[in-house]
Length: 265
Image (cartoon, rainbow, N blue to C red; front, side, top):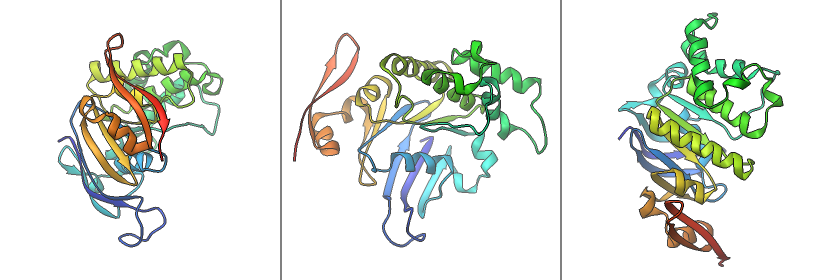
């Protein structure tokens, strides 16, 4: 497997190796080129898992490997050349232009005190074009709409030229139109560029339409993992959220849909 996590444990408040863990004995495998969704209730560990994969956090126990190499042995610069994290929200300290935001994605490839060169600008403009934001290059980032900001942040991640894109609720707080736009962009980038993606979301229908594999998480553990069609079931939705739901194949959309029915004790 391309990404492999073996018996990962992590706790925010506990000393390494002692006390309670936010993630406990978590193991999973992610295929190269897949688009994998992380599903689960608030506090189940989805964002923590993404930060562990990105090297922002270090596990108290267990090993994470990328293409057979332990990420703990990689420098931050080496890891940033392989994985890019798209957070839920991005709040720059200064009023950068969209192009300047995307150029920040080139930093892992620059040496100390080296400025961006023609190749870096070419890569940045290519990332803007790939996300449909080339016309926004000179616009101040903070003046953009929510959907435009998200596409620019994804462009910055693409400018890192990573093998893996980690996305934390990429459609949260976006209206329905922008949700469809961002979801379509991710599907196209995965299909055309072969970028492996790991996506944390609360939107079960987004996951059903976009992801070819799912990891279901509850209380810091993996409840189930596998192909979306096998894992996204009414029984699993009930286990995850204490909600009865109708899960069925929607012919017009071509994927499973989830309709919540009632909360259960």
